[in-house]
Length: 302
Image 1 (cartoon, rainbow, N blue to C red):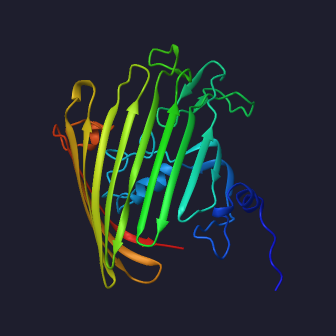
Image 2 (cartoon, one colour; image 1 turned 120 degrees about the vertical axis):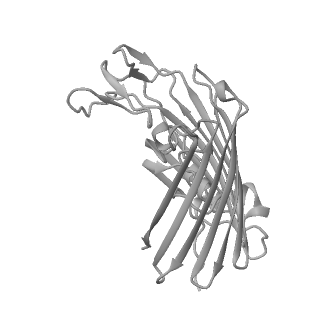
Image 3 (cartoon, rainbow, N blue to C red; image 1 turned 60 degrees about the horizontal axis):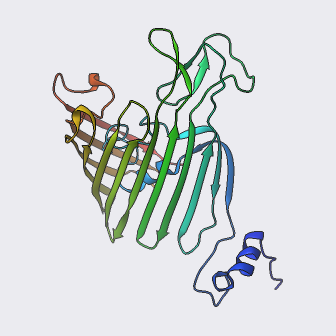
């Protein structure tokens, strides 16, 4: 049988770290595949948020409130982003994402508070530099081996000097740079799976002060075609007028498999938002700080 030739990554590993090169007598296993992408690529933080609790971004997770995909809350990717995923080594995979900040947009542009993108107020222009946008830098590390899945992501989003329009019509520049750090994992034990994670959000520059730490834990249990889900968490705000206050989450759900690709689900979450991390007060119950949401439906996979 003809032996396949080594890939460049395997040749480099063999020459620099012979003891780690993948061969029959080696204890370390390196896959030769790596990925390079450019465009609108998902942050590794999205992977991390789905690893540390059982609901992903759905109702039950507290996503965009106590749990975030980025500094704004719900954005899961950036534009013009370079993405590199390393080959897997003994279950470990590294991720690097980079999107350059743009601060040379034309006058009269309005910045989106959720994405940091600046769109022109008049006709669309494809001219290079017609839009300001935030910069994003992220490093991530994921681990999958047997019953253990673990993750780490550190995402920094820079809006300093990104132009926008204030409410009185005067063009101003952004002043904030925020880091979102997410870590944790889950462990499978037969029909049960346990989850544990933490996410810290901290604004390091500018007048907007954010310094929160959210700890979440949860579990799933599969019995026949039915899977039961539970997530609980507590967020603490350390700065501003709500310093020392907490927001707590309780999420429950049940999923019933109708077929290999189709399932029916019922999910419910309740957030007591004393730390005031939910963006829209209209989503709360009256003058209280409590928000509840329920979802029922059918999910189809492909």
